[in-house]
Every structure is written in C-alpha cells, then in structure tokens.
Image (cartoon, rainbow, N blue to C red; front, side):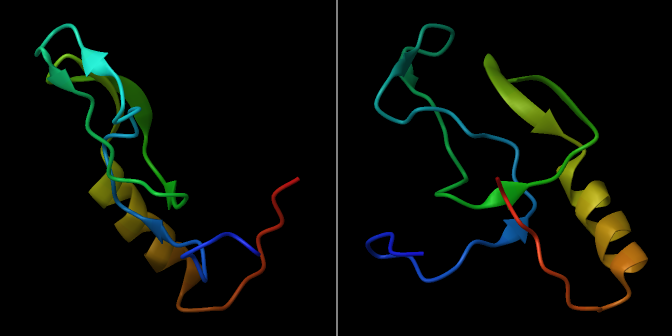
Length: 78
C-alpha cells in the first residue's frame, strides 16, 4: 500500500531478481530483474547466466495454482 506507481503485488513465475543498477561481473552487463515488488515462487535457488536465480518457477506456479484451486486467499507479509 502507498507505493508510488504500484497498486498490487502479484505472485508470478520469474527467475531473476537482481539489482539492475549493479554490473554482473560474469557478463559485464547489468543484473537482470523480472520482479518489481512481486513475489516469485520456485523450487530452489541456483545460478542462471552467471546470476543467482529462482529455479523451476513456472512448474512451481502451476503447482501452486492447482493446489489453490482458484480460491482467494490473504497473504500477510510481516
């Protein structure tokens, strides 16, 4: 709430959550981020393209969706 240019937080598939303002020494380019305040689910953490990453995100999201059965829920982040 009250975050400029944001109206909600989503849970979605993503692998990269790097600081886009920093250079990845493995690639000499900026880190990649697929998250702007959202939550990514995955099975484990590892390395993709020289960057820390969330792994198996798409299959984890599919499993989460199947288990939730389309039901609404409230997630409280403390």
